[in-house]
Length: 340
Image (cartoon, rainbow, N blue to C red):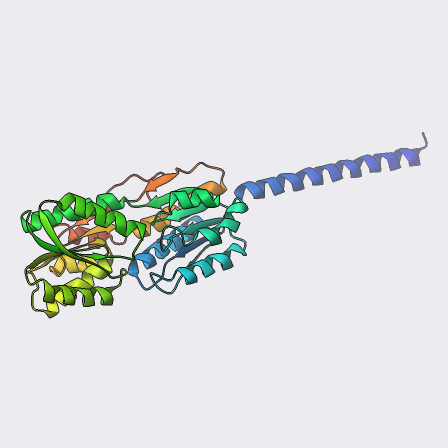
């Protein structure tokens, strides 16, 4: 074979080999990138007026920064703004998010805007407030996991503490949350069941988890029931409103108020004696775990279908410890992703 032809053939072999190496390198790099790609996480809560939802947002954003994961948190305009919340979900559904965490206003409101997300096989984490399982099934919606507190247990803790404060007898009233909202139903049901035959529940009024409305409702209760000894509020905002109404009536210390949530102002009120107690939930930890769950799913890891967030009864005895650790728990708890 002539020397020139041999040289051309050698050059062709070298070029073909180089092309193969480049192709292999590109494929390997692309595969590596796919395996290490970070999720883009969308979280939608009810509103940012309530410090409880702000804490969930803050926990999610902080964990996103820790893991190097972009997190966008949106909200409706109020606790009951189902229309506004749904609009936020629908807008974010058209953006390039790979995992969603959603706190519904009630058991069904977010189902319709979540269906297009579910149909794309994008993971959906139901946060804090459970969706109606029958409605979810009927809509064909796929929920990857639920992360939230045991609200029945929270109601029981509040009830037993109230029983202890009142010596197992007395007239009490209940401030309910949003009518039909799952968490409130569980809390109130547990409180009623635990105190049945001991405390006399003279009135129950919905105040939509709002402080001002709770204050107004409590003022009316105090006029109608002068022997009222205690008020159970289904969240801290309502508990703080009730406590203010009691103070305005000159009855501070005479009527015990126990609420649920564990927002910072409520813990401070327990510390000072304005509130008798609060069953503290930890939305900050819920936000952290939501991001951790999405990050785990992006890596192909399994995530439990149900994750129970921590709760703790806060009284004047442990309010200092709770405040020092706030917004994180001041005690150990089970976390499937490791300590947040």
